[in-house]
Image (cartoon, rainbow, N blue to C red; front, side, top):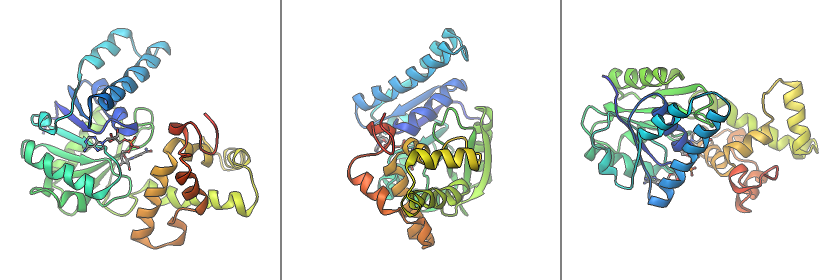
Length: 282
Ligand SMILES: NC(=O)c1ccc[n+]([C@@H]2O[C@H](COP(=O)([O-])OP(=O)(O)OC[C@H]3O[C@@H](n4cnc5c(N)ncnc54)[C@H](O)[C@@H]3O)[C@@H](O)[C@H]2O)c1
């Protein structure tokens, strides 16, 4: 099926980036947030990133204006009724996502594809809140979404081939590098990256290494483009702790559980870049 109009639910870190990808790919896009202020904050994020693109010569001012012109805001899910694809990027909470999908299932056309950007929840459990789980898939973008090319297209045992294909084609058409995978805990990248980042944090204490030296070690010794502490600050400590807990619950391996140091940082509100401080000060 051809996807023309796109809805994005939640315009935080990921949703704003996904909406930006969509408008830049030429799709009329409507973003849903809980309040007008939160919606305008999302629009501000998109404007800032597109503005930076113009400054760096990656796009023209006319392209930026046309992209922003394709974007609209709402606080009502019912305004997504005529979307061909809706991508959900609300907080990583199963019950919240299930409520959003049950409502999307009621308000959208039966042939619209509904996608979740969940990092570590089961797409199948989210889809089970709908009457028609065949049209539900995972579309797992990476942060920052407009920059990182990978999108994991997650098919559940109930996802229709058409829905998986439509999500894949849309992502590819938007300039991304989609990969199809099963609905297994952590999908591909997080299944590997979450325990690996937890190991890095444990090694800070075990080997008595400062965060900057850990990052120096992994960028210079393992060729990582970004050190693990800088990466965790970018992901958000709270997002990573929640994803670790979800993966640990499902797979039961100790390495999946969030290290005490990260849980403390979360409790102290040291959430990384978004809170102004994490392993580093911003
Ligand atoms: N941050 C990352 O690195 C990353 C990467 C990949 C996937 N994800 C996943 O993306 C999702 C969003 O994460 P984020 O980091 O953007 O979170 P975030 O906290 O930055 O944004 C979530 C937004 O959703 C909004 N929201 C909450 N309930 C809503 C509702 N019912 N309708 C509309 N908006 C609602 C909130 O107001 C907030 O602005 C999560 O499932 C997360 O696991 C995050």
